[in-house]
Image (cartoon, rainbow over the protein chains, first blue to last red):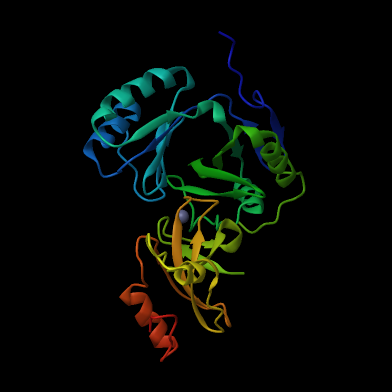
Length: 188
Length: 109
Ligand SMILES: [Zn+2]
């Protein structure tokens, strides 16, 4: 078995915010009826978390669960555990109409941190990122310039950004440009 | 810039996060329909100056389709609502009536 390597293998950049590719992250897309108790159990067993409400993200480091749509969740687990967690979820979900798929290798994850992190993200996504509107515990699916991306906040100055692996290089370049030294806007 | 509230995400999103899906509430007639009915389903569209109903998709977001009621002449948005309906819900129609008394659109008023 060859050794898995993330899209940009921990590339990083320091500007008005620090931009870093986070490396491998286990990700399972789960679709089904989010009010189903069996589905909730599969999420709890995999992550220790409850099913999140609309636009909520309950994430602790590389483990957690994010609301993606009224019938879709993104389950985060350590990359090394994703196959075992998926097998367990599939087993739990066998009696209900639901689908869990390992999408870990289809995605790239970035970390954008620092006091200007909100500004860097705000340059790329058409989203109100003021502290009043967006806080840790929330997720937003949107776009980063021309590609789809989702993000949540680990803490008040740190964003976790997810995009497709195929556009990881584009997304990293976007984030670097948005984080160029001297490019503070001073809005947030 | 058009800003619509995605009824699934419950968040105001701007046009660049959305994909336009054309006119809402088109009726596709069933098997055995006449050529005229199929022709109208395919080609005949409203082109109002004023109240209009459209389909939109939150493509850079939840990915869901929804409906929007808005005015083509002012870009005013009367409301958005679920795609799981064949006609504008009562509260949307009332919201339009409050602003545009006497409006009509296809068979709705
Ligand atoms: Zn949405």
